[in-house]
Amino acid sequence: MGNSLATSAPPTPGSSSAGAPRILLLEDSPGEAELFCQALALAWARCEPGAKSLRPGVDVQYTGQDALEGVKRQVALQGRNLPDLIVLDLDLPGGASLKFLRELRNDFRLASLPVVVMAWSDEQPSMRTLYGLGMVGYFVKPLHFSDLLTMVRNICQTWLPKNRRQEICLLDKERNT
Image (tube, rainbow, N blue to C red):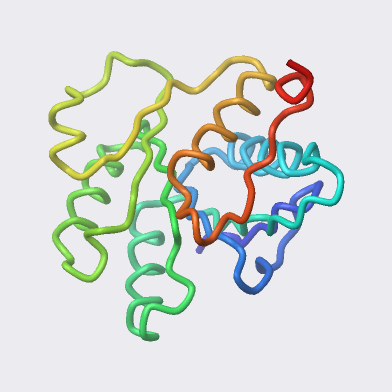
């Protein structure tokens, strides 16, 4: 079963604040999942002073099966705590990522959840296949933490619902330009 990580720095087990955006991160590497959460927490910590945005909660799942069972349980609870965004590692063992995406899209109650895919390479199954399965965006995993910060911020700015993100924080260097 996956862990629920709050995005306060550093990420620790817990739940997100009420009304805060929720992200489901499907990543088989605990180290990469922790880096994602740390990048998210750091990006939010660099907000304009006095910003009142709510930090997203991150639910980390390590297998497609656990992630799918989790969102189906949430749907059974009248859709409470459904993720606002799913970030999916395309490189899960045994094709589990594509299987997860297909099963998610085959459930009419979950088909509209936005899914952003991340991979170590852009030499993956065709983008046409991924977009056909309902992917809304694709990122190559960065090698440097500073690039991960930018990627995480871009993911949040682009795909978190505007009504759930009062303000997405800008990194310091972007505020100064």
